[in-house]
Length: 411
Ligand SMILES: Cc1cc2nc3c(=O)[nH]c(=O)nc-3n(C[C@H](O)[C@H](O)[C@H](O)COP(=O)(O)O)c2cc1C
Ligand code: SF4
Image (cartoon, rainbow, N blue to C red):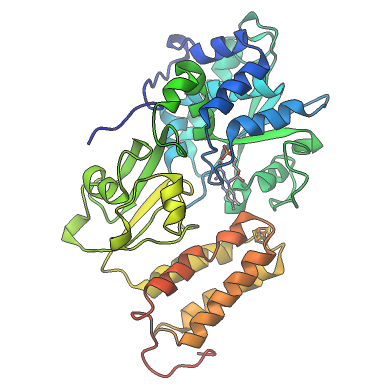
């Protein structure tokens, strides 16, 4: 099966050999027309929430303010996700081009790129790109003689998953503790230093640059009615060919992605389940994989496309070990602001730790009830999605997880 290349088409890394075609085209257009083109493409944000990019830009554009900011979110903390690292290393100029186009469209003259602290190579590559772009006048004043001024600064993350959340990330750039803000106000109204701010994912901005370059019509010709274009899928886990694949939405089913792109499970192992969108999403079983890879089909299957991280889990893994691993992650990564997220995730971790022999129906219900409470009370997406994986494993492997032995909740 062939990869459809929309985003990975050209990967020029030398700034002297890159002409910034999309940026030059955008700078000749009115800001409103750039926004209309991106809106027409129906591009959805690739950071996980899938918010329409053109609409976000329009909201920020319409805000009256003496200063606006553009932030590129390269925190990429969702386990199993490594597409932004790929783009920052292999297509940094396209990412820069997307940042400049978005900034021009909304009227920002200053921006930040926030890169996960562990990403040493992307940080090195992108720092050099910023320096070279300044030297060549692609950052700074009167870019390509258009009258558009913009400068960009790189901020390294310090290792907190919650700082990928746009409001925590804004706090972190401001030098404050990385924890989520209450919304509204949304960043497009009151973001960095209380100014209108657009936060977009790395892949979103690179896609926007290609949409301006190749045109919204080309983008609209790819994918399905509700999922246009292509997506970078991060394939990992117990498969033969892990890696990044650019797929046209609807072109392949999840099973085909695993078998044809991923080469099937390694070591002849059978499949236990698939996590289709990173560990914040619900699992799918073997008999649920014959669905096209689109936003709408994954939603209908009770999961979500999330960040594009497809994690394949072979039959030999212990379910409680897997749940403990995920639970530990959320217990460690909660920012602690909301009591149910902080204490609930901790309680669930300890229940899983004590219940190595399985669960009674009452215990399973208790975990799910705590999960519901976290979901209802959570200020941000971390808490809201922290139980998706565990709840879905408990539901789908009910028989396997039935208690073996008479162990009470206190362990
Ligand atoms: C806990 C948490 C972590 C997140 N991590 C990331 C991340 O690493 N990268 C990202 O682009 N978006 C992440 N997001 C989503 C952002 O809040 C935001 O929606 C996104 O950066 C907007 O860009 P987009 O519209 O281009 O998707 C995260 C959200 C939450 C709640
Ligand atoms: S839901 Fe969790 S991570 Fe999000 S703000 Fe509340 S405590 Fe922090």
